[in-house]
Image 1 (cartoon, rainbow, N blue to C red):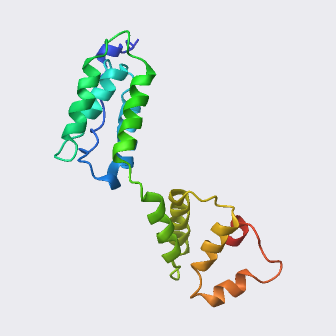
Image 2 (tube, helix red, strand yellow):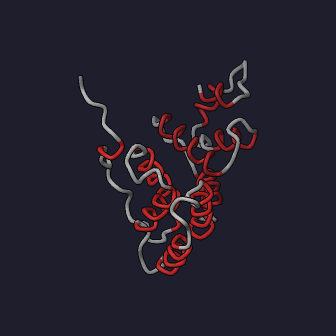
Image 3 (cartoon, rainbow, N blue to C red):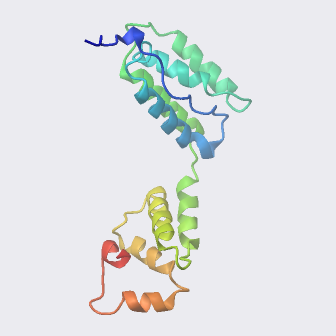
Length: 180
């Protein structure tokens, strides 16, 4: 019979996310990588403490652009009782403060501009569709909206023959049918 490992026996797995230095274009990726790391290590002693999770995240935020913010966050953490204040609010407050300070406010606008410029290049239909879906998500559009469908079709403006084939009766009106 194999003994069941105890929480104190389990070691952290995976590599830590890359250091976040304040680059707004990497803020979302940093949070995603960090949350993935926490999920991977949720059975490890120490990772259950939300205060320690925030402290670990702060150890991965370094550089001239972020030092003052990290210092202030550490000061706030130090005021917390390790048991009584170890509640989800601690992580939620850290995450919101991080987003408020570092998230790219032009992310959605850039995605919309990229959608306007996205063009299908034969024969890379799968690449076009994948890029289109990613940009639609990042732009905050609904994939089934008329606006999204028009943007999808706009990318084929130089592929008139292909569009003529797509729009032979019965003419598809939904994104999924047009994609097929």
